[in-house]
Length: 494
Image (tube, rainbow, N blue to C red; front, side):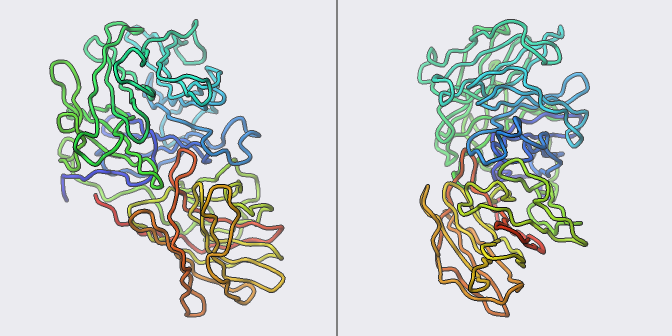
């Protein structure tokens, strides 16, 4: 078993990662935006190989607000900390403020989110407890919500983070740092008598990683750039977590924006030189390295395939809005039965899409579908972002049709991507989606031993601050769709 890894360590959309260590175990949290459940949690024993262990948020709040898809809203960049025997997550909703949730174990039950800093435009919070038990919280600002950004504000907090103790203090003004723009995503640490803030600047796609230090919690902070693209092909390497291993090594987990693939996860070695951290190879991302502490690779990865045991989806799946009772229909045995939900003429506005991140760079996903319902019912598999395409079954006055449709411009209505093919009512079909270089997406189906190719191809696009989603759906006035399984195979550099 090898003791080397290749970046990215996760070639799928796990945005804005933060990581903590508990003994020999590492836990990662990521932002989830409008996806429900939110705040996915992953576990690893070597910082390279990860598996999904649950979610910290089962429904988005306010609940009524998120009963419809709200792309680009919801859960933005969170922080994960271990303090006083509990795990803590602080996360922002840029339209409502900063929330806190806690748990005894990341894979266990998390407390209901508690709004502790109300306000529009507050993003990317991170708490800090000092040696005297004082609690603080730092956050950034979203210009889209409050009219300004490039600033970090800190608050003295109650020890349980339940409320601020006084007003916020501007501790870093990005406008005063030469070349700094879009300073955000702060992560706060203590080391050797210094307060450290790791914070990205420059924007998601083309930015870099700052490190800042001060002897005093509220500053002033001096800053350096610790990681940037340099001569590598890793654009925008930033926003992540500094974590140490049981063997005393230091590592930095960050993302790279890959558009429709989302924000994929990289792991960089980190060393200390003259009292400052240096990330990667002298500040440039590495593509390959030995594993942390020389630990062996573990043959695990976040789940993608699913047989839907006892009719329930695995933790890799999420809805595009808060789900309603009855979207999943109970039935004997395995396989997923989705109720046909009214609406859905435009899948971008349908709340009942059950999806997961697009895994790259190459993906093949297959499912078997049977649709029962009246006129206008339809079901299938889609690859969805700002634009989308789907393949599946559709009911009309003329019968049941094997259909492939596309909405290949923002706001554009669907149109046929190929001539529909008539199939018997209640017929079962096998559906396949393939994604190749450049997120070029193809669709195909099998029925009665015949293969039907949909002659797109379709180039997937990202959604609202997330990558493209591969999703199952069922819409219409009544009826249901049965998906026997979802089988995904990927090829990615590891």
